[in-house]
Every structure is written in structure tokens, then in C-alpha cells.
Amino acid sequence: MIIREPTPEDWNELRNIHAKFYANEFRFEDFWRAAISVFAVINDDNNRIVTAGAVRPIAEMVAITNKDTSVRARQKGLNQMLLIANHLLRDTPMNQLHVFIQDKKWEDQLLRHGFSRTMGNALYINLTR
Image (cartoon, rainbow, N blue to C red; front, side, top):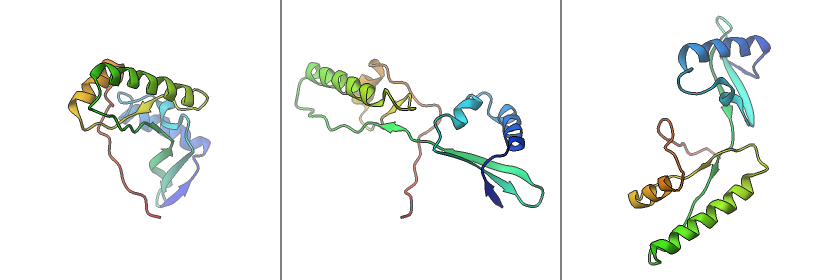
């Protein structure tokens, strides 16, 4: 396998692969938008793309909330956190803020405050260092 930056020919092939397999899942531009790096893995037997990847940053908010405070106070606190996060991310290429939820009540609260469910499941892998 060969790993390289996509060539102009690769981009044409990637557009075709996207149209054939992923057009209903995401826009092609979303594949490489705000990427730190884009790379293609090429089959060295036939010089065709096996897969391509784009590594891009996402913004994640992690919160510790005092559940002993009133619901009203927690809602105000959430609104303030969202204002701050929006301000911090305003001048970045990131256009989403992600949160990962285990508490159903907190999830319902976030959905009422404008959060949306992701398409697909969120998975992670620990990186080797």
C-alpha cells in the first residue's frame, strides 16, 4: 500500500467514490473541510484508491455540573457555557460543538437547548504514544 496526499486524479476518483457510496451520508466538501491533513491509501498492485482519510479537529465540551443546584440555575449555567464556547470557537474553522452524554436527563436538556444527534455512532480509539 502507498500512502500519499491526493493528486488531482485522486480527487476525481474520490468524488466518484463519494457519489457512489456516501452521497446520502455527507457532502463531499465535508470530507476535507477544515482538515489538518488529507491522505489517500493506494493499492500498489493497480494504483487505485483503497481508502482516503481526513484528520480534522472537533471541539468537545466537557462539563462538571453541580446537580445539587436548581434546574433553573443549571439552565442559566448551560446558557453561559454555550455563549463562552461559541465565543471561543468563533474564529476557528470548527462549526460544531460536540458533547458525549451518559445522563438521559442532561441529554434531554441539551436537545431542548439546540443540540442535535449525530449521524452514526460516536466511536473512539486511544492513540499510541
